Amino acid sequence: AQSVTQLDSHVSVSEGTPVLLRCNYSSSYSPSLFWYVQHPNKGLQLLLKYTSAATLVKGINGFEAEFKKSETSFHLTKPSAHMSDAAEYFCVVSHDTGGGNKLTFGTGTQLKVEL
Amino acid sequence: DAGVIQSPRHEVTEMGQEVTLRCKPISGHNSLFWYRQTMMRGLELLIYFNNNVPIDDSGMPEDRFSAKMPNASFSTLKIQPSEPRDSAVYFCATKTGGMNTEAFFGQGTRLTVV
Image 1 (tube, chains in turn purple, orange):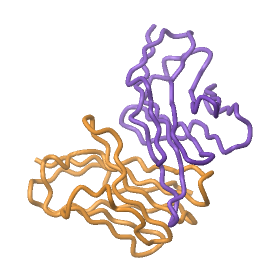
Image 2: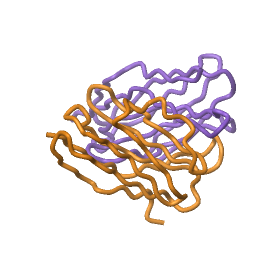
Image 3: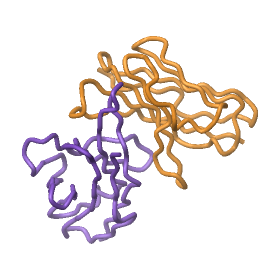
Image 4: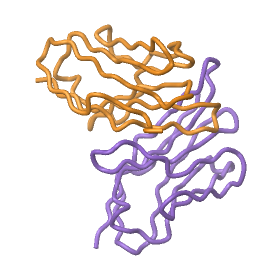
């Protein structure tokens, strides 16, 4: 079965410092992985995706993630946090079910950015 | 394209009433997902369709919930009768292609059952 585990439910950083949001996945074959962001009272927006091309994936707003098969991880990073990055972040795995693609979401990580 | 369109954006209803949430997918997208989001349970997949056919409805909480996709451009999620514990934000998401393509989310419907 495919699943994702987000290791931190809450992360707090100071503006200008690096961000690290952790995600581990479980998949019986090469997965497709995504990070989505949800700002308060908004829908979910795609940040970036990994689809077995380059292992280092760059997304919007300066975020990037590295796929590490040996560690079954897909951690999200950003060198310098901005106040506007405060939001909830979801790690997602996509897998075929025979009749379509199912998206399995992690439980989310709430990012707080402080002055 | 206007993206995934959900209606209504907000719904307040009394316990026992029927509620219908609507979703218009992005044109050409052949997979559609209904999610429910609450503080307590996070984001839960309720049901998803592929080419208008329900593939997995194991996340539908109980018989009070039903979903349909009569054609490629419209889906509904119905709750009858509604209960206060159904209060949540309901999201519709659609995608095309295989595993490598991302899903696009609507803005959600905030349902309050009083």
